Image 1 (tube, rainbow, N blue to C red):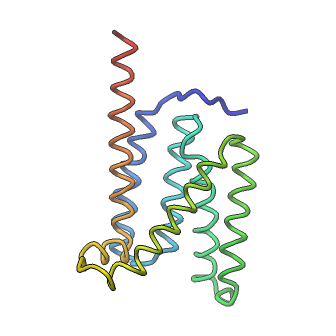
Image 2 (tube, one colour; image 1 turned 180 degrees about the horizontal axis):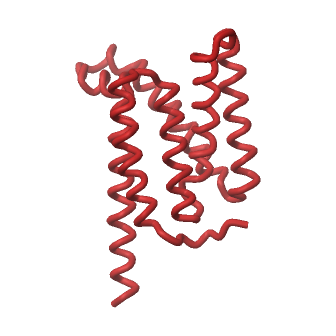
Length: 169
């Protein structure tokens, strides 16, 4: 059983920062969302393994499953007709793994799926309602997701360091 006490949140934050940079670079080179989703999921899983807490794991497992399903549908010959089945199957696999290894992870998995839904809705509506082509393009190309992960990593490191100073005082 995984303990809910964080062991190394600073390392987890650093993994998020490095992973976010990799995600942004990957997105700028590939412009392909399945790889970006898979990279986000893997980054969150790596952060979870470093922290060994309750954050990052369920959302990482869910996004990794979704990304893997989308990647297979897009890049494995003969599977493009099964995109929805592979996407939902990947999500299901991620949720099953989260339920097995992260018993309190449903909130994280739900948050991951909700964030995808909100980003998709924004990407569909932004160009028609506001004039922010650079913001839209950043998310459409996928590199802005890496930037969001970097910010999340920086906040994680800063909060962990702040909490460590309070305990030392």
